[in-house]
Length: 232
Image (tube, helix red, strand yellow):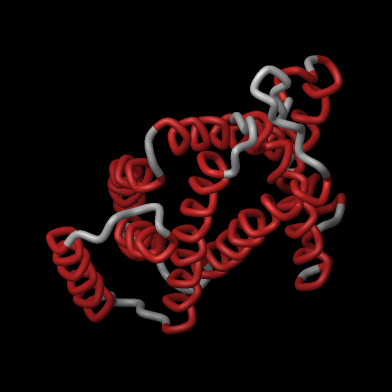
């Protein structure tokens, strides 16, 4: 998020028109700071909770088991979407969700290295991700502002970066030091940040043009590849 914040700020200085949140021709005024915080804070908070919980879960349960739990993401997005009004209730889909939930429970019972705390953390990450995707869809489609993927990153990334930095300073101050950065490698962190930046752009485009549910369904293939890779 810090790299995304730096890149989007630099882009705003060079090409501010790409980050415009208003439209004079359509009579849409730009976002004010207060309005931007109101729009972006819930999304950023959900994203931070999901990242912290998800990273914590990996410390206690296997990567493959984490991905099995994350396979429930489309069902979670749909359920929260029905509650928030971004999805319409459907009995066949609800039945499918029940089947997926049952499969998840069976998988959890059969897990050789089951850890309750790790499972709860991954479940929290799952709920946070479902909430984040639905909030993103509402923000990108229903707020009436000219929000494109770049202007969305400009709103969400700084808030998420500030929250994650605060969590790091409170929970583990030793994790935010130059010694740790040098150990991981500056180029590695930079490459990770660049990938995350472009990934965020793709995510916002997919949600804005399609829907959050369709985006999560497409992510099932990614989960299959991760599970296969962790086994191999």
